Length: 307
Ligand SMILES: [Zn+2]
Image 1 (cartoon, rainbow, N blue to C red):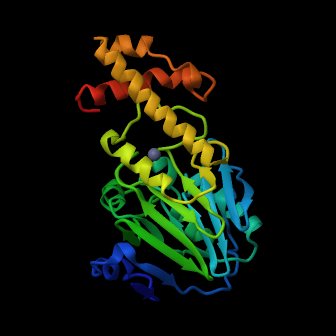
Image 2: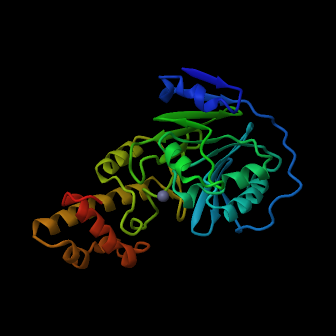
Image 3: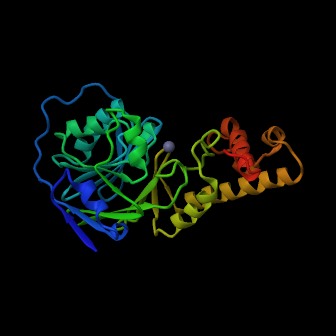
């Protein structure tokens, strides 16, 4: 099914009218010329850009990364991060892709530390870029009511392929993992993936894995590996490749097995947090600070308590 959409505001309503939308291909027509605004915000986080493949960039704003895909039809920006970072992102985007309009903003998921700031980015590019997210992000963001985190204009259920200037950008929802609305982006012509929060580059999971859906996480990870990516830009940390994701999957499997063993031995959650170690990962980022919390979270999941 192919859906061509030329009007901006009714997008959400029109897409919801399509029962077969998960397989839809979306084409947005946008003006190619877009004059830079006269009054760009002058306060912001300094953002550096690194071209990881032809026209594909990691934009680093301290602890968080955004993702940028340049096309002949404009640039697509993933995750404005914050009000301050978004101002820096606008500068970095202009530096990476001079003169290009902002074709769309995509939220990797609804968490405020990745999705905030879209309004700043829109204003910096004259306020017209549609915001895209997985459909479950919409009620969460709407309920939040943050003017700096505007709700998406366009949502999808399972998969959506954006096409700008002949370049395809696939958005895949792999099921609940970290939050229930996290998507990954894949640019097939360069086999580059953008993945946030549920996988990292040689770093243990964030604290006690808040918002994680463990039953579905391992399914989502299997689905992730079905995507033929070669390079990975992460929401946090350095650029990686397929082997980086392989190591992450091994970590989650080893973590689960080690905690299950602790449960089988009769350890309490506190004892497991103290005693379970995975020396193979001791050199990973945040191991000392967060690994025991990872153990506690997985313990509560495996023991059947709510996490
Ligand atoms: Zn998150």
